[in-house]
Image (cartoon, rainbow, N blue to C red; front, side):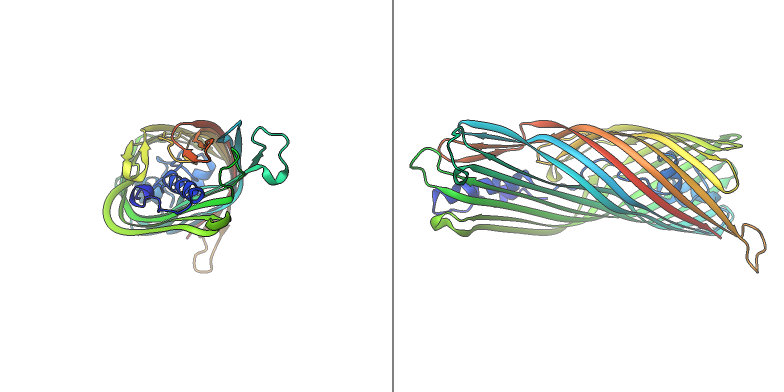
Length: 470
């Protein structure tokens, strides 16, 4: 998305105090240029088996979830199937200590942005259809990724003069919102070439929605005596964007030994075909002749263009089927991607996951696993940019309920599977800080490229899913 500052320089404002605040606003606009892809690749697990076993399912066959993880696994479905699942809530606590650095005449301080959010994330809807023996198709809807941050900071300073009364304190408020969500619709097919070899292909339509808002408000008393007084000023920068595109995927599964399966899946980068976006800057003041709204710029764009906006992935895993269930291990490789126009600079990342499912009766299955979700790195040149390494674990239960029908007396003519799972992840990494400098002459400068701060994240998610075989 375009650089708002480069395309819309600060307007000519007639008063010095207004010009200072307008310059601040347009610097902020550059600091909040929208991004096409943010955060880590694995926002939530897709499918019931993945929720139980920490996502180690690329070698798992005979499930509808294979439409997402490895379409080759669709081929062995013995029946038509419908899977519905959702992350009922995800509680995410993010601590960004000292992310705002304020340098004032005769004073300096740092302030925090903390975010505690309760998210409701829709996840998966999959329907499969068995065309014939060894060939099964699927259509699905997925929400693989959501990134949300909402936080505020309010601080005051006496500018090194303890005698200042409350009406003459420097006051500063910063509000930051980042809200990104990805949706995908899928058509996939799996084909069993021979009893030990399966292949699959998928087409994934993608839609990404991104909204960001940064508000900074300052009450700036006279600094050296005689300077014009700026009683209050604020700058609001809002950006939003939508991207429409597609990904291609394929996979193979090979039963190389009794009970053992090797799975390999490849997903292309997200290829954007159409983008639209909007950026708006609003500057206000209540200081004398500059009172009211005196600086507003809106920039809108839309265009059809081919661009890579999210990385590709290669997954390799093995599964061991046992008398008590199955266990699996998997490696995921996210490819590097650099797109300066979109603020993307991601390194190649390797993640791992190990999981199991223990079936201790015909009705109950216990699952668990551990995983990593390492951040891909970033220039972190915009406030709120984060690179986080997550380390997590999952645990859950699956309950199978069997029904017979008048026209089909088999005891398992219809099988309903219900999964309840918990996921916990701890993340540590860095985020870009916001440096605000107020000079002796009252000029306000902003910098988001010089300083990074450490951050930590705790995330707990409850997952509920259901599958129906018929």
